[in-house]
Amino acid sequence: MRFPSRSNHSVLMVATITFLATILPVAAPSTAYAQSNDTPPPAEAAGSPAAGSPAAGSPAAGTPAANPRVVLETDLGRIVIELFPDKAPQTVENFLSYVKSDFYPGTVFHRVMPGFMVQGGGFTADLTKKTTKAGIQNEADNGLRNDRGTVAMARTNHPHSATTQFFVNLIDNGFLNHRGKNPRGWGYAVFGRVVDGMNVVDAIAGVKTGNRKGMQNVPIEPISVNKVSLVDTQTE
Image (cartoon, rainbow, N blue to C red):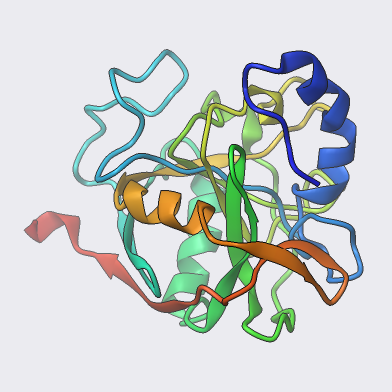
């Protein structure tokens, strides 16, 4: 399934329900779309987030340098993600726990949808789902929006099921934002943004995809995460 462009709002809204069962979490290879037991994703632009000043509700350009940063070394290049522990403390703590345990190296971007998002963090190159800990509280009500270049957690239809899968928004995906504390309105929790390597994210979005093992939008040639490291922002 391919999501319409941002300009086609009517079609996008009609596709929202289908999306929630597809790109949101990637619960399992058997689950249409979605990232097995997690949520959906976003992205940014070459070397930095979206062009121009961030709008209200988006991570501010002047975010303190003390915010932790994680570097993803992928087959297509380096992506640097700034995390927001002040806005999404549980989500950041969970993500960093997997980073520190070397969970992500060897995983792939298993769901790529141009004009929407790229998702990864849960499957190996042969699309075997990795074992995770229990899901976490959905912090999508933190005021951060699923704008281009932001990173959010993927999940299943259950609002509080995110574990390891994440996605990078390729455009402003407002329909993924928090609208209410109910199953259909929780939205997807933004916990960081790409501050360098958006060109790499866009390159991932441009690869050819197909269907594999009951999953759609899977890159024909696997795009792996080879190394993940936590940056010491105090010494930068």
